[in-house]
Image (tube, rainbow, N blue to C red; front, side, top):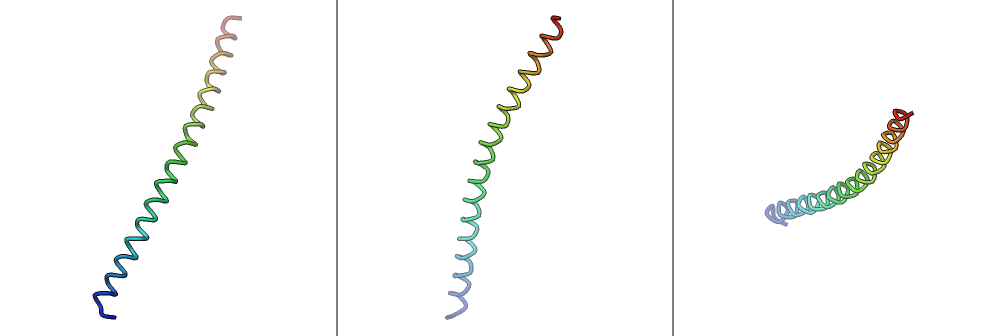
Length: 60
């Protein structure tokens, strides 16, 4: 093997690792985004409940 093919193989290996990492982090960010949306929905429900209780307390 000459130096050209070794360098080419190293560059292709680095490209493969970079591509796999990009796909991994893309999927990870999509999963986290879904989790944060459901978390935001839970927080919103809790805040709505707190507002209802405060309004009920103010009426009394």
